Image 1 (cartoon, rainbow, N blue to C red):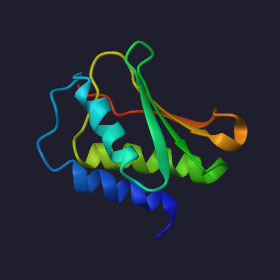
Image 2: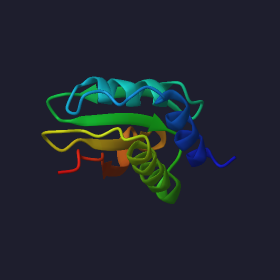
Image 3: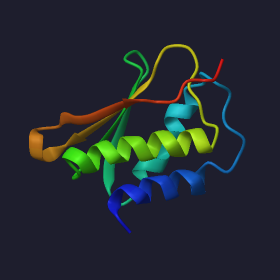
Length: 111
């Protein structure tokens, strides 16, 4: 299984309960829990003031961008949305001194 597919499977496996109330920081915490429990990333950090979830992985370039797309799609499929201010997923890698190699918006609650 390609590394970025692990994220989609992990999100689907963990997010089995009804989604947390929109805007609740537990959405970010649940996403971090999923990311921390995959073999491909660690550690995960949440910035409530910056509205970011940051994961550290060995993936770079197109693979890191694909992780963003897979996470976005999995969150929408599981109906896990973020309300209020826009939240972003940032992917960093030790190879670049933890510089952000990919980022994407996390799904907003549909209006």
